[in-house]
Amino acid sequence: QELYRGVDASFHVVPVRGAEMVKYSANAFHALKIAFANEIGRIAKLTQAGLLRDRDQQAAAEILADAEERAPLLARHRE
Image (cartoon, rainbow, N blue to C red):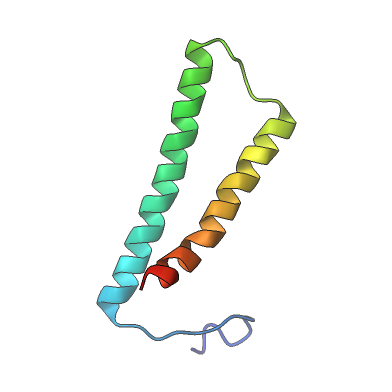
């Protein structure tokens, strides 16, 4: 708690197994996003679609960020 004293965020104490699961889930989700981006790049190269325009890259980043933001809400909703 001392480490996060100046941070404006909620603080939760959870069992070690729960913390491990949260970390594992976050890492898996980030890996999924990277794999998705790599696959889209591979398909674009194969179809000669070329690189996405900056505007399209920004839109894709916003979609992924929105999905990441909503993920905890969906998990809570299913409980």
